[in-house]
Amino acid sequence: MSIDSPTLGGRLQGWPPFIRELDATLSVHSQYVLSGNLYDSFLSPAADGAPAQLLPLRALLWETLRSSGASFMAVYDPVDGLQIVPGPEDAAGAESAAAAERLLGKVKADEKPSLEGLTRYLAAVARPKENVRAAFVIDSASRIARTPTDLEPAERDFFRFCAKLSRSARPVRVTGPRPKPLYNPVVWLVERPGDLPPWLTADNENIREITIPRPHLGDRQETARLLARAFGVGDVAADEAAAAACDAFAEQADGLTLQSMIEVTRLAKERNVDLADLPDAVRTYKLGVLDNPWSRGHLRRRVLDGEKRVPERVIGQPQAVTKTLDILKRAVLGLSGAQATRSGSRPRGVLFFAGPTGTGKTELAKAITELVFGDESAYLRFDMSEFSGEGSGDRLIGSPPGYVGHEAGGELTNAVREDPFRVILFDEIEKAHPRILDKFLQILEDGRLTDGRGNTVHFSESILIFTSNLGMYVPGRDLTARDASPFGSPERVQNITPGMSYDEVEQRIKGAVADHFTEVLNRPELLNRFGDNIVVFDFISAEAAHKIFDLQFANICRRVTDEHRLVLAVKGEALETLRRWCTEELDKGGRGIGMALESHFVNPLARALFDRELVPDKKVTVTGIRREGSIVHLDLQ
Image (cartoon, rainbow, N blue to C red; front, top):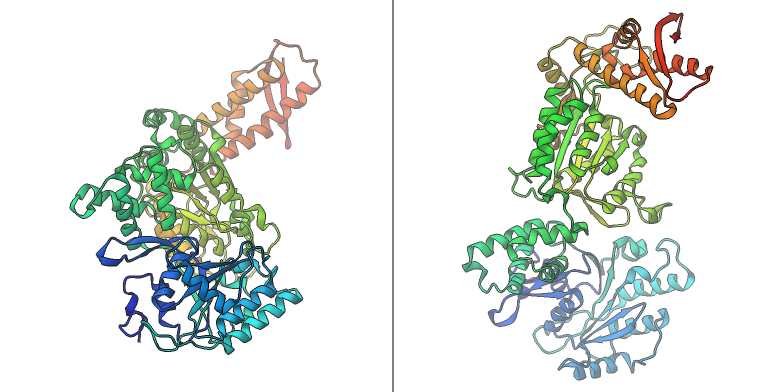
């Protein structure tokens, strides 16, 4: 028989499911542990066909218990002590106070909260000497015990008493809507079930644990229609535009509580935001910032200018640059994930850069950051080789409660909370532990992540870039025992080589990436989140290598001028020799050219200049360059 059947819970049809569950089981359980979404507001039907109302948990519990014949509800918390609901300001307050005094005795106004007093009150309610139906709510019960698994003597004795009380409670029979015997329930309100000693509820059928979930889309839609009245909308059903705005508000509020939606409405009214523009208020509420770089009028012009500037910075990758800029334009227009039913909470842009090392993947990430946010300070990089251990994910989101460093939070979540408008680079993602990759599922799908302190961080305004060298090498096939690696794993063979067409390189790398996520990691769902956002980089061509060489060589000359006010020149034959040395191994990419320049030119230049008296504004000319073994010498004039 279900809780929603006419005989169990049908009496409160339309109320939240957890309330119907509690109400339907008052005859069999003497205590309840409520956890989860405690501080929200909840939809409850109003009388006489009036619109639903939003009630806090305490008021919702009282309305439920009152309908079952309860005379009062006692609420206790470690700060305020004991309070009686309804209070003296309510019409029924005097009657409730009299019933409470008969059951609990006279409550002193200045009585300080204590476990001894709480024990006395619990016994009086759960084992009443009179047929008075009531309830006892222990608010902030998570704060009673210092540590649930390491109780102090007084705390241990108190919870032992509560465990015994759950089994010795006495049902009460009263006249009214529910004349059959019902327990006077003791309701614990805890943030997490683990905040109470585990032995209190383990194998104890008298205590029922109920988790209060966050509101689903239907609840948010109904709440949005209630809140529309604040904008002067009467009948939302009769106004198509208002109904559409309410639905959009509900979708944008994914992950928020109903109480948060109330706060968003207040924020919108304060800023004179119309009902149709509530998603902007949701963004402000989630992110805590008013300025939105994505809404700046000049951003489209900057991206258009980037079609000329980015190829000058990322040399030799026309296909990768074009596809990246297309995805960036989609992000600027807010069309990322537009094909999905709910896309507003997903990251602004997601890119997966794959291809040979040293071909410009990191440089393109920096170029995007400068293009969108004006400088590279919004660029945040994580080297995922540092997250190869299963427990290293705590660095990203913070340690869970009770562990060292819990109060510090996570590196990723702290940075995004501080500034949600970022380009976040996860370098060499294939080196991260597979358990850590699971955290990206929530970010890519829902655009949010909960850190170790329980705070939700939103990535809806960030661009996420993943880089990988997957596809360069793949496990060999049909290898004999003689060909196998001496370390016990199959020999790896080169999958792509310089000289292949870009189409073939792209096909092979995408195939290797797909195999890695589906067969090696068994995470096909993560691959699906990347979709067609995999951007493949090509090997550096000879023409691109010469351009990179010229660019890096010019940087060296400029640095010499800036540091020492010298004019550095290299004669043609020496320069061509140096160019040939630095561009002969293209498989190492632009980074290889830089390393060769450092070895073949910067090091011997520093050696030669170090032995000279440097005179400002003097011209230094390299007339020759030669190698003697592994040592390079420069002839200066």
